[in-house]
Figure 1 (cartoon, rainbow, N blue to C red):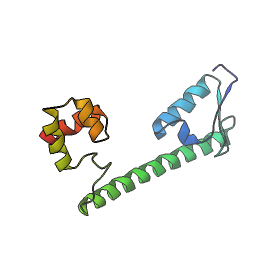
Figure 2 (spheres, helix red, strand yellow; figure 1 turned 180 degrees about the horizontal axis):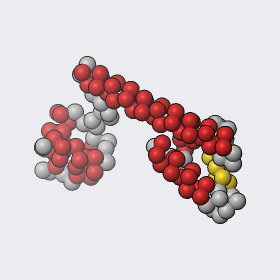
Figure 3 (tube, helix red, strand yellow; figure 1 turned 90 degrees about the vertical axis):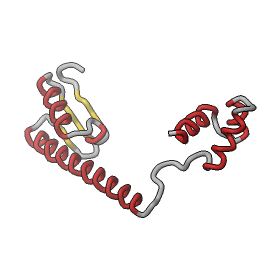
Length: 132
C-alpha cells in the first residue's frame, strides 16, 4: 500500500488478534499515510474521533477474546472433571487396536487399515500412542 490508500476490513478482529498488534499496525499505517476503515464497527482513522473509536473497539475486542478463551478453558476443565473425553473419539477401540496389532504380523499396514476403514497413517499413529 502507498500513501493515500485506505485499508478496509470487514471486522476489527479480522485484522489482528491482540490489542498491542492492532494498535501497532494502525499506527504504522498512519505513519505511512495510509488510512484504516473497519466496516462493521464504522471505524475510520482519518479523524481524531475515528482513532479514539478504534482504540476503544480494539480494547473491547481484546477483552472479548480473553473472555472467550477463559470460558473455553473453564468448560474444558469442567468436562474433564465430569470424566468426559475432550476432542475426537479414537478411531479404534482398545480391542480393535489389539486385533490390528495381531493382523500386522501377517498383513501389510495398508490392508489392516482398510479392514478397519481407516488410513494406514492413522493406524500407525494409534498403535504408536497405545504403546506409550
